[in-house]
Image (cartoon, rainbow, N blue to C red):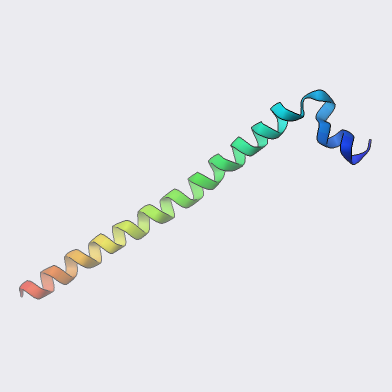
Length: 56
């Protein structure tokens, strides 16, 4: 089996590689989204804490 045959996946290359691509996209989103959300939550908490300290 040559590398080009491997990439062609027996004629199902589009289906196979798009499935791998979609799976990689989902894994990436499931990794990045919580990080972004966590940063947003921490930023909001810091802002609220700063406002509370200013009121004192």
